Length: 292
Image (tube, rainbow, N blue to C red):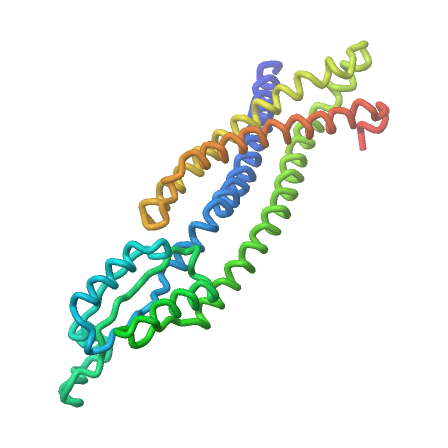
């Protein structure tokens, strides 16, 4: 009979530990993924900005030497990520594929112009910067026009600012939720031992002596939960990097290590504070109140 009761108690204890570890791991995993999103928000924003192309249209009388010099100077400019020359024949072929027919057969000539497609670095994809760059290029007598989608760029910058603000707000709210959820799990764990806490107190144990094993146990459970969440995050990051290599998610390991250490520290701090508060609550209760 006593062996069956001991096995039941052991299973109950293991189940309690497992639920605490699982809840901590899930919360820290979601919190860590939010942290990764925050760290990569700028990278994602830069990636989308650098997809915007500025097209420099050249006059038909532009000489090959002038075109090559312009392309080289653009490629070497501080604001340029890439500069690719597109001949009028290449542009016509691409346009024909897009519309599904050869428009030159209908017109009898190629109305398109030679051009250079310039992709700017993210820091320069801003209306004011683009206006200055376009003004400098149009001063050249062999440049006909500099074209870019100004409404799209303005909308892109506005949306990035708006999204960044909401991500910051969401991270603050979710951090608070994470603390409350972990605190709730630990309070339930301590609640199941409330009679043990009160018994130890009645036989003369000090509050610090009673709190110590509970704090240490939950800190260990928190560290296990943090380890599980870090392993899960590493798997997700590895998968995401394989599917989206252009984002270079794993190319900045220092920040990832800092984030993982931060998750570990957060688990220790939250479990310590939550356990202290929970045990202190039951230490201050009267014996009769333990039944409610």
